[in-house]
Length: 112
Image (tube, rainbow, N blue to C red; front, side, top):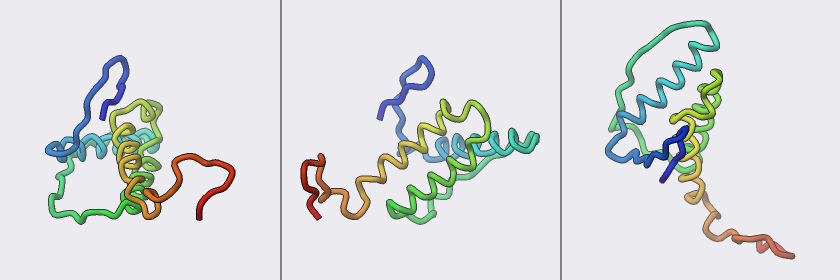
């Protein structure tokens, strides 16, 4: 998956880099809280390899929750964390029930 990040295009791969991705997402969330509440917390997160595998809908909801909690500072929309959150949502959507059987385009009638 290629992502434009400023003037740089990066190739993002979370597999094998789970700790780094978790840290990026966590730091963005902390930055948001610090911005909103005038704090200056910094900390580390440890990726839990034993965490449960989420269903597609739970991954989408968790990503939306993280986006909601991380968007308080002005640089969020262009952040790497924002790109990861959008990628989580985009990658989970095709796994939703009914996605593969839904029509690609809408014509005069929609199949039920």
